[in-house]
Image 1 (cartoon, helix red, strand yellow):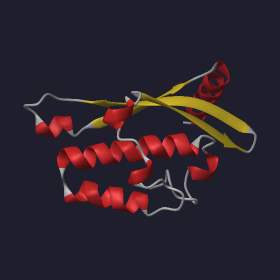
Image 2 (cartoon, one colour):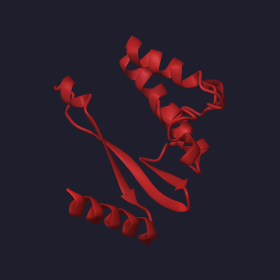
Image 3 (tube, one colour):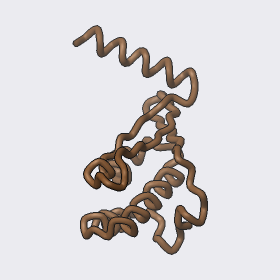
Image 4 (spheres, one colour):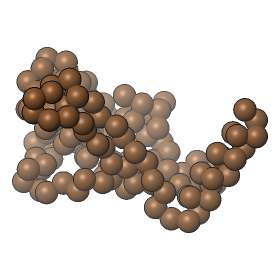
Length: 128
């Protein structure tokens, strides 16, 4: 729950309202699809955080045509990173285990962000 907690990433996400709405819709869709108590519990805990929109305030993903990518703008101590994320799922209807695997990818949205990530990667390589 680091995404929604004030002690986690939330204070650093400039477009938090857009991000949390995307996340709530995704968890809501998962809860409807898998009908697992764990997913329903996650949705309940997510909706209990302050300023998270209630389900009645959101448009279900199937009614809105939710984008497969989500832009996220992070800002902290003068550093601004603009990324977009997308989640890939694996498997076919015959393989339930693989269908539950999700891989999230983050990509830079601009050259400033790409350069910052390259610089951090280079620093990490040099210190490893």
